[in-house]
Length: 398
Image 1: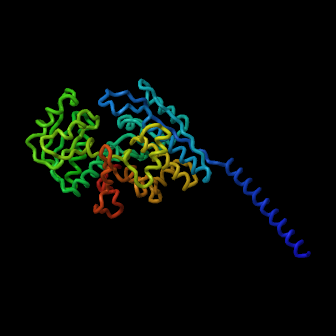
Image 2: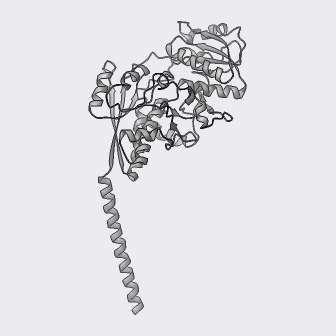
Image 3: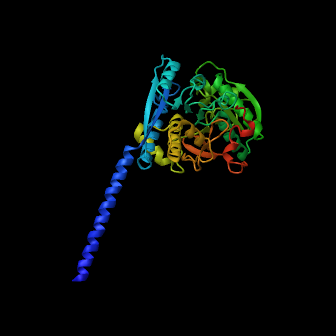
């Protein structure tokens, strides 16, 4: 009888302790929820003009970039539930005829210091130096090497691969295949010339040779005339692979299967170097592809991926440092401590000398993932990711 009484006493005591601990835990959680660190991130862009339709297969995407930012905020808040942060996305979309500089100055006056920027290179360069207390800008649209070199800004982080990184990725794969003789076809636009410059640098860097270079300056519609013009245009050149520099997509899609010699096409069309592609399925990419498509109703584009990574990088810095201070975030992002998950098989980080996100570059055909650079066998004393683009000894960033 005495034993039964003692057991009941122990049971009652255990219940009291459990209730006490549960109340304290709930009180702690409520207090912590009230103390959540709120982090506001601005998404800054301008409405894009709808370009002339070059293909009925590629509809114009008006919210390219924004949907990636929204998904990044959702993932940050999922993590923040357990780590004590709350993230808010502030969208600033300047009309086509609006004043970008005026809208940006207003943004600064409101105290925003974490800004995801989806603007062309010229506009990014204009706003990056404005303001005495320059915010941290996360560039999710440009690929210009100049912004990572002589025109670099210390407060700008670049999320997409530069043209040099893309060209180096192609060059590594071409060297693996022993396709060293290149025929370079360049479009008439400034962007085409910039990519052509990156291709020439990559060819020299990895021991390939530009055996011929031609400018595609045909002013008529390539869709109607390619069958007769491309064979003549590519005749008389002995080469392993044809490299296209046509970032606007004016003619590059109509080169394949029409050349005088049966050769593969790479560059801005054909085998394309990119940060993200709908055919990418490894390292958990299927999961984020599906979540994005469910949210946006379309495939993730490069700008979406860049915006997603920008938001996630901010979240990673805030979580690890438990601070939303601009200087602390910047210091963490440029340090060796950052290991950002990018669904590419290895952690991503920023180059301290120019703010470029070092990352693998996907080499993709229209419906197939062909390879991921850096290609196996290309070594580097720090990280193989720095075999793509301008390495620290080559930097001109002050």
